[in-house]
Length: 93
Image (cartoon, rainbow, N blue to C red; front, side, top):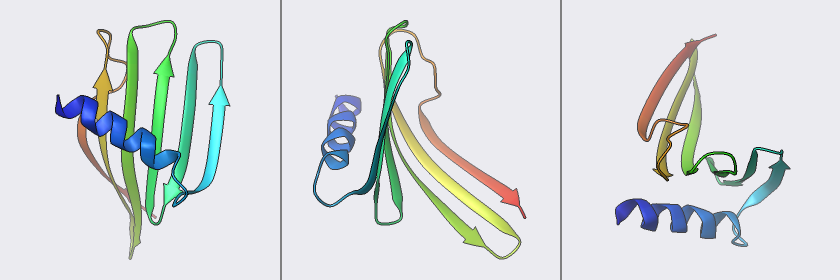
């Protein structure tokens, strides 16, 4: 239930007038759309070959000594391509 609501919310936000830098990518296997909402990057991916779709919200924070990336992903379908949930990544400069 929460997964479907988050997926719908992220998709609606991507197509809202508040976003910028809207882009699409289509391949024979997957369609991807993404946009920026302030410091947040919103993305939705739909895979044709597998039973999979995902939506994510991420933010990249430049900090002294590196960059911190925080993202949250929700997935739908029977075959998971990406890992759902929170991901926190620190990369040194």
